[in-house]
Image 1 (spheres, rainbow, N blue to C red):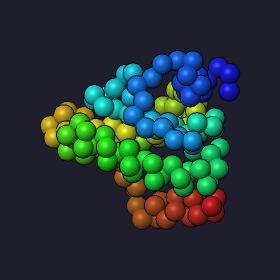
Image 2 (cartoon, rainbow, N blue to C red):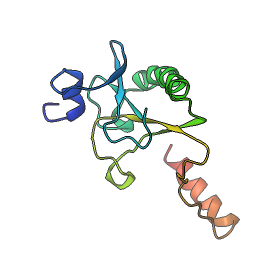
Image 3 (cartoon, one colour):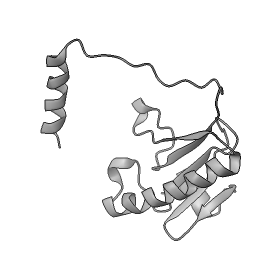
Length: 136
């Protein structure tokens, strides 16, 4: 896609700090990192989000995600990593080219997980379970 910033990075039109590259994927440092070493993993081929990526590409990407994630953790001496993908604007997606965030995490780094809600009762929980199963 001509206007996609990640496609421009793939084409070399915009510089990036690459940490991994093969024929299908590219991983590079996020320019606005949560912690230093925060890495983005993208398919080179443009796909808007998780839902538009072909299953076989997504499957291949998971192996690369594991490899790059381990390298981020080891290289930054992190205590753990968060892996996340924002899909659609309501979920915080800003760049509409599928990508995973690999974020190094450290004990006591001050970052918190999102708040947990709860179901009113077991029937409400079952209702949502049924709705989701009907849409598979």
